[in-house]
Length: 170
Image: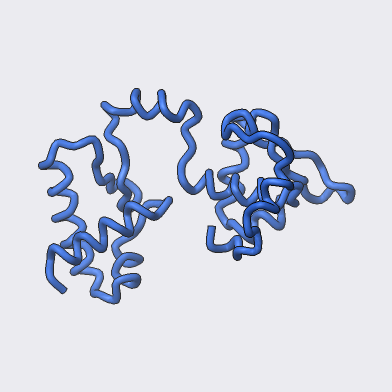
C-alpha cells in the first residue's frame, strides 16, 4: 500500500476512534504487518508535529489524535464539560436506555465503569440501588438535558430516533 494512502487510512482510524489505538490493532484493521503500521504511525506523528497545527498525535498509551494543550482554552469555551468521545458514547447508551442497570450497561459498554464515575462527578447522570440491591439503576439528570439543550421527555426524543440500532456499535 502506498505510504500516503496508508497514512491517510491510519489518520482516519485515529480520528474516528475514541480510545488510544495500539499499532497491532491498526495493523489488524488494515490487514498489514504491525511493523508497517508502526512506521506509518511515526511518519504521521512527524507530519502532525511539522505542520504546527492545533492537533497532535499522542503516543503515551497508544496512538490518538488530540488538541494540543495550548489550544485547550478554546475547546473549554466550546465544550465546558470536557467529555471524551468514549464517555459520550456511554452517556448516549444511558440516555437511550434509561433507566439502565449498571450491570447491563457494562455488558454493552465494557469500559462503562470508568465512565460512570466521571459522569456522576459532572452531574450528568444519577444512580440508585435497584430493588434487589445488587446493581444500580442509572439515568440522566436535568443537567444532562440542559447541557445538551434537550427539551421535553428523553423517551419522546428516542422515539423520534430509530433506537433499534445495535448499541454495541456505540
